[in-house]
Image 1 (cartoon, rainbow, N blue to C red):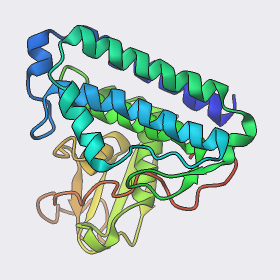
Image 2 (spheres, rainbow, N blue to C red):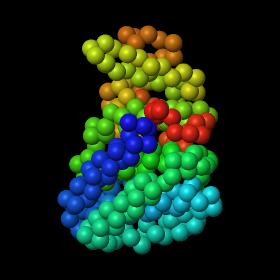
Image 3 (cartoon, rainbow, N blue to C red):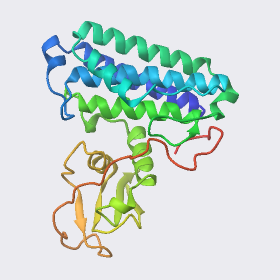
Image 4 (cartoon, rainbow, N blue to C red):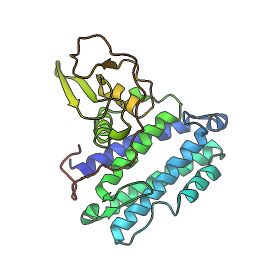
Amino acid sequence: MDVLHALQTELTASTGRLLATVAGLSDAAVAGPSRLPGWTRGHVITHLARNADSLVNLVEWARTGVETPQYPSPESRDAGIEAGAPRPVKEQLADLEESAERLAAAFRALPSEAWSAIVGGLRTAPHPAWYLPVRRLREVEIHHVDLDAGYGCSDWPERFVRRELHDALVCWPRELSTVSELVVEEVKDGDKHRQVWRDLGTGPVVQGDARTLLGWVTGRTAGAGLRVMREGASGNQPAAGPLPAAPPWLAVSAVPGLPATPPEEYP
């Protein structure tokens, strides 16, 4: 399975889980608060629908070679979310489903050579079009948690966790960092493995499993279960103090230095 097929298969499953959650909401629940300050669940759902349409614009850019903005402007993006947020759940669900299908159809129809076309976004560095499904998966999985409707970080698929933590660390804002290293710990086939990301900035070392680290890095959890160590300390020494707040997450939504053509797998 090539990376494009794998990403689109993953996105289909991710979208299906999101739609199932939204289908189970009432009108009152849609009008209730999400986990994002100032946004109701209706804001989150509308944002996801409009994000799908905005990525269709970038697919069209890749297909035609004619620069097509993701959104006409930041103001129009915000206005569209505000306008759609108060709608009842039936309208929200239909919009979310239809916009997701428009994007899926655009992906399916994109010629193979167009996946290497360079596109951009409101706050996104230019990147090859094959990265668009990665961006959409990020939106769906992170904002599914933001709905605060029963789907949490523990429900993220392992493939998503691995990819998103990699991208977050590649894009780490070193000038704003609160840690010097992150140590990713996991168990494979009964053996413990550690991956160390060094030179992230100034501060202690934070250790933990990939899922817990991603929840903390993205600001979706407080990081319960992560361990804080002094820089250069071994893993069996006492904690070096409380867990610091994570720095701003993903100031840009595309990793620098991506290959021009779709790789065999990513990351």
